[in-house]
Image 1 (cartoon, rainbow, N blue to C red):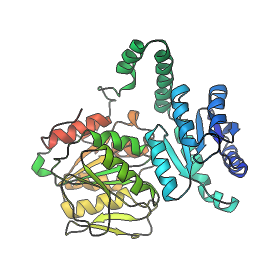
Image 2: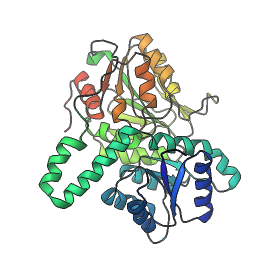
Image 3: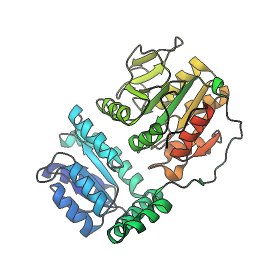
Length: 373
């Protein structure tokens, strides 16, 4: 039995049983089940699970309201279980913006549940065993307790505890001078687990006069990337859209790769949305997008690798390095899951390793534009 303790929340008896059996088959302890958000809030305080799987649409109290209450009363990592619809996508993106660490799309029957088994286990294990993430939620609980005693204590603690440290972890850095603004023609960003809040923070610091376009691959299914783009557009000075086939790249515009499809850039500097190549595990894939940028722009690519599970993008970022481009990686200690960032750092091709605020600061410094506080 692992040290990960899970509370399963869903109004469907079938889903509660199916998720519990999947987790238990991997040696993960299920400490309780709840059939609505109110029960979930009560059981989180009572059972103190290390992670919660949370349905969205439930009677009495829905998953979004339960999530918000949990983040106020007893913050723990929450993995949303969403329907694969546009409405489910909107609710899931809202949940991710309110503290959920990730999501998984639910299936309708036992046979279909098999297809989500491996991903559910992998995500629960990755989140549940993430020491940095666990410490983050411990600090949040401490801050919440302090806030109930003294607003001044809360503000003091928040200043010193909740902000990512300006002094970042030590990693091997491939020494290289920062490029001049005229040496970079495009920015490519790869991100997965923990991506929506990380992208929200990153883009909120970059002004609208960014003189190059940004292309982002966030691992998400269909519907979800459109909702993500719309929410990021509202939160940023930059224009953020879900990319469509034939889009011309425009400075100051952020293009989110369409879920379930591949996004690339052709030699005419226009976006191509297609199902090819079909052999790729991820749709969209960071490797596909980054390799196309290197092919179209050569050494004039700035690659940014952020939080995410696995190593998608590793091969593409190696091509950026070979061509003489520039690479910034999110500090793994600030990632929800550090696999994608660590894969680039471990290959010794990262030119900078920084927290999210630091990444935004570096981008603004390169292009000589004002960082938004």
